[in-house]
Amino acid sequence: MEFLEHFQEVLLPDWCLRIKLYRVGKSTNYRYFRRLFFKILIQKQELLPSNRNDESELLVQLLAELWDSDRSWIIDRQLRLSGLQTLLGQLQEIDALGARILGDEIANSLAHGSD
Image (cartoon, rainbow, N blue to C red):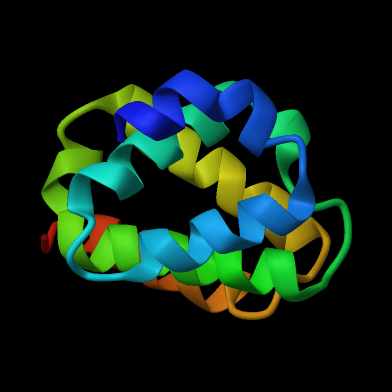
């Protein structure tokens, strides 16, 4: 995590490196890495994919893993929940594979108050 924090200015602008980071973040053993990466993406939304591709699909998978494993952490802060909704909204606009399903799942979960 310190590596990502320290070298984010070098790592994140390169889409190949972002893809590798998404793959690392999808691992269930890296909860705090996903949290940190999520916070960075909320702050640097210009790094989000601008069209449907492998990167957008991996990002949706990373967000799904974050939601599944850390739902209460996201819900605990309105800023995190708004950030997730913003990221998913942008991914839905480019029709990223799975973004609409994940967005619907989150909306349904929030509507029914289950976490």
